[in-house]
Image (cartoon, rainbow, N blue to C red; front, side, top):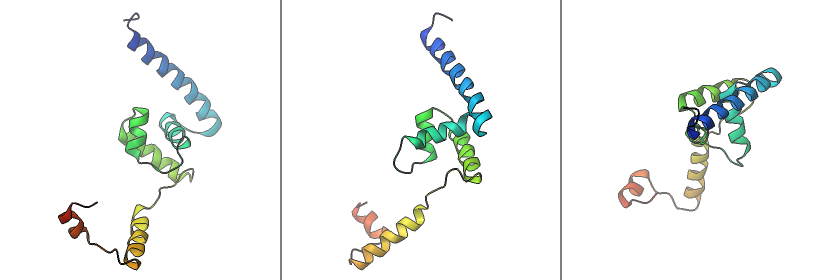
Length: 111
């Protein structure tokens, strides 16, 4: 087993992660999933989904969702309200007479 490269890489990654976790827990009170969320967000210039973070970090989505919830409670991160954004886009579309209902778009397969 100790000659199997994927096993060795996985073991090394787990060890490094655990070492960083101890440091981040002591300094900032962050656990592994929380610092993975922050690290992923830190490399982006825009909002992203928990699924995106999960895919990037190879961490189960429910674990990432819990980490996001904890970071939000501590006011370290915030969620972007997509409903407000969609409503604002709707106002702009209507002001330009571009209003089209979801049903009309679906019928025309326009997204």
